[in-house]
Length: 179
Image 1 (cartoon, helix red, strand yellow):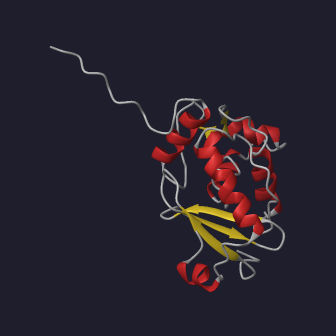
Image 2 (cartoon, rainbow, N blue to C red):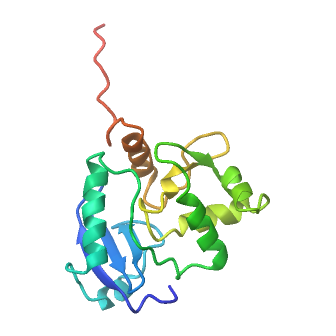
């Protein structure tokens, strides 16, 4: 993380686990699940002061709450993507254009950013997305439409897609079929 020293943090609970939020003076810089891959080191996180009164962190917490309730499908927050390379930033920006409840294949996203041969690099950039949920990397699926590669876990990816498609976060219980 290039600019990670100038951060403020807060944590919020969600139906899918605790989320760490980070903001810079430019905007929201991080949303990570507690056991998410590519999360900043604990030492770095510890160095950030907690600031639950930060306006960006407060707005993020409020919008996430509405998202979990099914009342919000697009976030309206200032984003700070400056920790990524220009390529990563282009991928992360393209993710924001995927409509809620819809999915896009990695190859389609690579083509959309003008790099059709860079499918693996697109996948790597998506995996390094520091703004889970807000920059919707969970909306990208494999070439065959299957759920693949989510740094927060495939169970969370499936739940986020169900929520956005109007089905709620968790799978309904299987109906009993008498023998």
